[in-house]
Length: 362
Image 1 (cartoon, rainbow, N blue to C red):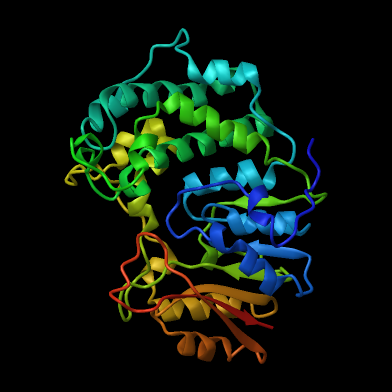
Image 2 (cartoon, one colour):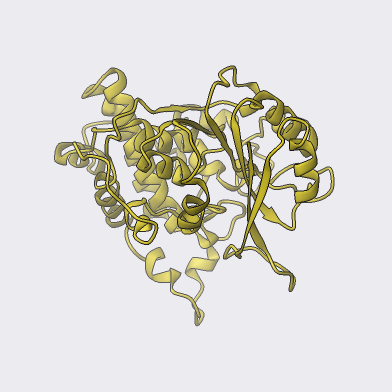
């Protein structure tokens, strides 16, 4: 079992698993660490855990971490990287996962997603591996089974993202991979790599990132507004940003519906909105979606008013930083704002300067 790595602000990223998930805070973790390392806290909730990068930072810092995300696919990453302290996929697991075993394999992905996201032979590979992940139940049981499956899903998701234009599933655009055109970017090299090669690459990376920090860390899959537990020293919130005034946040369920489907493979068919050209899942709204953004912010601030509250946000955004401070001011007297100019690779700024913001409320 690996022990908690000793890191510095300068070498921090060398310890953190890579990801191509939109909005990931991985690249700015050193900046986040710089602004949070002086705070006194031991227990922490990452309320919108996403890729787990910030939760992983807290785990590296020796904190007792509760990772939470409403998406079941992200929850698997929370189990694999945050809750897990010593379980890895061994050589026999890899052999079982990556070969055609003596099962009668379904062809759901091949039949449903032909010419949408992946090539025919890639869809066949996905049908095989996802079915094998389910069949790990013939080798393991209980918590060990859930952790092994979570590791396999996490690795598979990273491979799936790599082979997608923009690393998303928001539209039917396989043609961007297959078009015979001159390209000014290097993604095609990754697109052309086999799924198995990418799976093994991410497996190797993930295996080297499993460690114990001496705490019993947790991973949960809930709507943060409905969470009953609220006794944390610090609560970190990286909520979806609103698209417009009084609008709802970015729809990660829509952007990553395909990997959500992989989690529930046997029920996938009945959950698809068949009127969509790219076979999206029917959306189940959370309380965060049902309320206005401001109402949702206020509800969460009130719930965790006894904790240090950290908001990761983008500026400009809706609601504004000023408005968020006003909402926080109902519960907190010490509110500080840290800014860093930063542009996510896919974000169109229309000439405006964009900032990553940390709002620290004590």
